[in-house]
Length: 314
Image: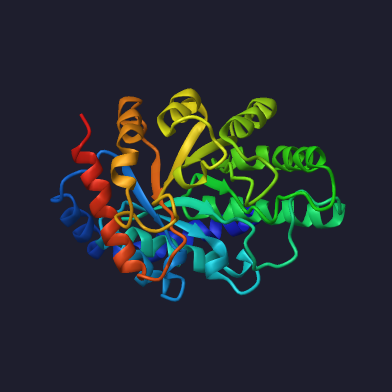
């Protein structure tokens, strides 16, 4: 968006906020009567993509989460640019009405739009893709988010070129975005993904190596329990070693289902204890891959497990 558009965005938020302030204040005040969790919890929205934005936010807030993490592809037909100034203002105010914050973006390059690829040898496609991620930075910032999780395995995998070249294209693309992300107070977080998903950045060590190489505050990494197949150390050891670079956490059962359907509760306690000891104060976000139970069940049952984990912490 242009600077004029940004002024319009701020004006739109201001106008619609006044209309919802009383209801929002009541809802937020009511939420303060519940026990305060040890961490900031969010839920990713794609399991509810068939529902309206307002209904998604209602479900997430009602289950006890403080944030909603957005997969932009679930909200558009062709491009995030469809969500113009007024629509972004409306989305922001729906979140405010439910006492939610935007916990950032993920699945950045999942289509639509189609035809994007971040590491392709095709310069035209790569430039188009970088430009789209730049648009996502603006979308994230306009909604109040401050992190973007760069997973998108298919759109970063090598395409008939050596992996080392694809990795360099990945680094170059992040470098091209870093200053703009910093200007918008957004961090782009490299998500390590195992070898069955991509051949570019499979471990936390590889992600941190890129973070160190770029040496830019707007490019960091994150930790996802589910994506540790290629790791050789326990969860807590990985987090301890790389804590200064971890700015977001994704949680789910190890098979990708929602919490409570497997043994995640006991597996994850040591890592949650470490996060508490480290005074981790950023998002822990629920991201699941089996949507069958429906968003409401996923949200409610997973929050129950998160609170049970907290009870086991010292």
